[in-house]
Length: 122
Length: 156
Image (cartoon, rainbow over all chains, first blue to last red; front, side, top):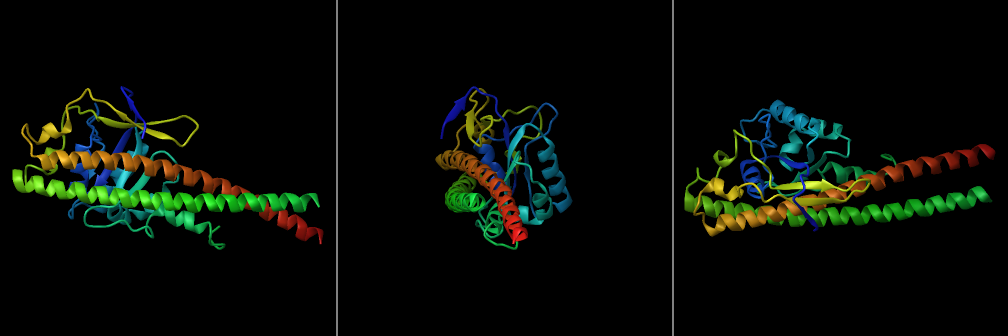
């Protein structure tokens, strides 16, 4: 993959469990801007769904975010909000986590693509 | 005759788009499999680091919460295309320093693993953008084809 150094690009945001957030922070995607807004959210069993929804909507509104990575099990909790996001930017990617392997049948982009081959959905 | 030939051309284009979307779905799925493998390996290395350093030393307590903190890995999107590149900014501190000065090798391996995850995520975003583009073109062409069929049916 081509890498561009010394170019200020757009951010990747992460919504996921502790290990996913810690891992991607180690990967260098974490940022806190001058308004003290971070680009990640740790979701645990005590996190309310409304908080996840608000966080997701906040990331979608931000123009410095290009890709939103969200654990697939967390995406399932706010499926109606994710289905409502149809803009290409920011791109929403449903990623697996250590406890929940990737399930292609739940991924909204693959579901939409499969719909092309179903005459009732097209 | 002219209309029939055009309809055939449209059908061929629709077939070609179906082939493209199947290939893209396959690419997306294999990319996600690689990403899953990478995340799993990264999490195993994080767990090893936790065992060596203590469970509170590798947790969300090390995530930045205050002050300004700049991302080292960002993305740059090429104009008018679906291509996205990874942009590395090495000016800021290495994020591994948030976990200590002398960190175990397993934490460095976890970092390498999650750096790869970032690359796979960007590849997945490129494939996704391409899929959305093909889907949009497919639907508009499908509408065009339906209109052609309606015109032929009315003529009969």
